[in-house]
Amino acid sequence: MFIRSLLASAFLSLSLPLMAQSTDHIHVHVTQTLPVFETCAHIQGDQNEQQVCFNRFVMNHLMNELKWPEGLQENGKVYVELKFDATGHLAEVNSLRSYDDLAKEEALRAMRTLPDPIRPGTVGGEAAPVSMVVPVMFTH
Image (cartoon, rainbow, N blue to C red):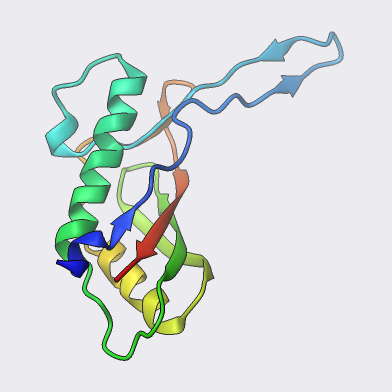
């Protein structure tokens, strides 16, 4: 079924090195982690496994939620930015780039239906706002 081919691609890097430099030229590595959805709560400590679980959860959600918009003529990709606040709530969903307005609206609608994570994302071990970009493919 062509609807099932509406799928989010692999995305984002789980550990983002943020380099800060003091006058002594000391580099600090700060780790960013993603929010944790209930289906991924069993994963503790392994950031790669947490990222894979996060990606799978979002992709499965999109496979179940996306519909081919009536009137959409072409295949293409929509880049959707997700911004989670420090409590883990999905605070903003924005389109960064889209090939078609109908596809953009459907991708945004589907992403807005994501449930709230059970744990927020972190930066340097502290709850913090985090964001990522998800490419959403529309393919017949």
